Image (tube, rainbow, N blue to C red):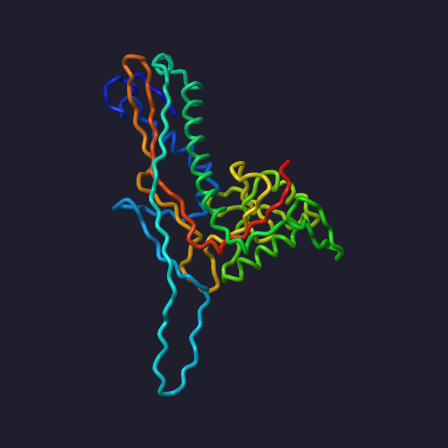
Length: 298
C-alpha cells in the first residue's frame, strides 16, 4: 500500500480519502479463508431469501427393467428444500488524522490487517458452524486411534484419529456415492496426523494453480484452521460423486459483496473506515460429511 501527497485530500468522498482501502482489505482477508472455499459461491441478485431444491434420497442412478408392452415407470424423486437468508456483518475502525497526515504506514497497515483478520475469522466461523451442524448423526463417531502399520501390526494412540478412523469416515461418505477429498482439522489434530506411524502417507503436492504446496494425507487434502475447535475432525466431499451429479457440499450465498467506505469525523479528526457485507453459508448435502470426535484438545 502506498501513499502520495494528494491521495488523502479530505473531502466527503471515500474514494479520494482512502483510494486503496477496499483492495487492501480484500487482499488481507481472502487468503485466510480455508473453510469458505469448500462451499460453492452463489450470488443472491433478487429478494431476501434463496431456496435450494435437494434430492431427498440416494444419488445413485439406475433404471428398472420393463417387460414388453408395459408402461414406462415414472420417476417420483422425493425432494426437500433449504432456504437461506443472508445476514449482515459490519465493522468500523477509527484512525487518527495525524497518523494519516504523518503517513504512519505501520500503524495504518496494522489496523487494516486487524480488520481483515476479524472478517476472515467470522466468515470461517460461520462456515464451520453450519458444516458441523449438518453432519448426520449416523456419520459422527468417536475416534479409535487405530492404524495398521507397515508390519501388519495394529498401532493405537488414544485421543488421535488413526487411519482406520479416516477409512471409516470415507466409507460413510462413499455410502452416499460421494468421494471423500478433504480433511478439516485443528492444528493439534494436524500434529497427531503427522505423527501417524504410516508417516509416508503424509506428503505435500504442488498446486498447479498457486504453485504452492498442498498438504495431503494419502489422497485427501489436509486443511487446518484455528477456527476449527480442537477435538473434532470433519472429513468431507466437496461434491465429487460417482454418478456425476451436480451435488456440491453447500453454498456461500452473497447478497452484498465485501464493501468498504470511509467517513471523516471532523469533530474528532479521525478517518473511519467502515466494512460491511451480507452473506450466509449453507450445507445442502450433509451426507458429504463425517465427523471424528473425542480427539485430543492439547
